Length: 384
Image (cartoon, rainbow, N blue to C red; front, side, top):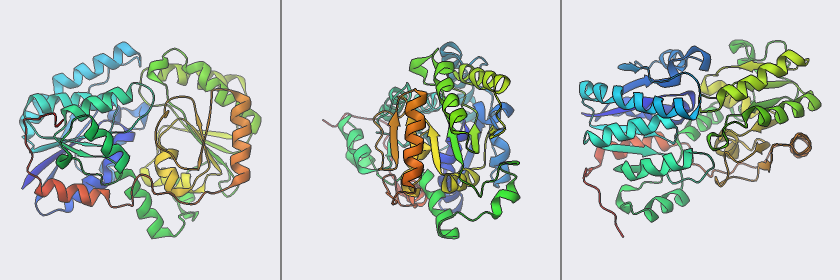
């Protein structure tokens, strides 16, 4: 059996690879190995490892690799710590393939470790264009990877244009869309409310009424501006005063600035209309997106999953700049008035038609099938 090792380092990592993990486990020719590390182990980022284990997956190893501080310095050091720890774990598990997920800084340690150890590297969600340091990391991993699983044909063409062998590039769709499609298939439009009480979401906020879903992260290339940026979003929420579900920022450099802006807002303003959460199980998050009147922030979720769900979304700032998007997304700068006006317009518009830009819900099984049969060449060559 071919041993396929997945490294999950954050809540975003897990939602982006869960369907692949399930498909690998179910495939008779594959054996799943799982390493959980970085912010996925930390309680203040939602202890994603607990969600992973509750879903029935077993971690073969855990790796602590986050240097506290959430600055460019600590982000670089965290990557270095991953480079110290992951090779030891790879040497112990002896995987036949390592999967590097997306574009977060932790995945760089995964990719470099596997490449230097002559372990075939598979990369999901490559070839996309965005803002922040993520784009540079994404393309760097593409040049280290031996087999590519982009979300769509446009991303696949970009990977080939970087000199990758077209035979190694498989536009299978985004694994995150698989989870959305599963929920839609199981629940029609997915907007049933039984899960609200079951999972304790919202507290005393009535989610039967129109509500906002907010997720805003730091932009690493705009380090130092996070508090001002989140301040404009919070000022807009204060003016809108709609029931709001809001997530804390991720672990990227500048996270403390964003978190500090949230804490100051909570100290100075009445915020009974907002409920703050560290993390949600993937399925809960998808159902919140299905039910929300509008998604606000700079997460990729309203652009990827949101396109298929048709959720009205207001994307703020440069973090997702250049990413292919559907008609459900309106882009604004970090300005209270622009955010408020865009939210009003999106709520007035209502749901958008589904646009399957990032896949049809079968990426996981396609990836597992390709990994089971692929002949992977370690020595790479630029093909042009």
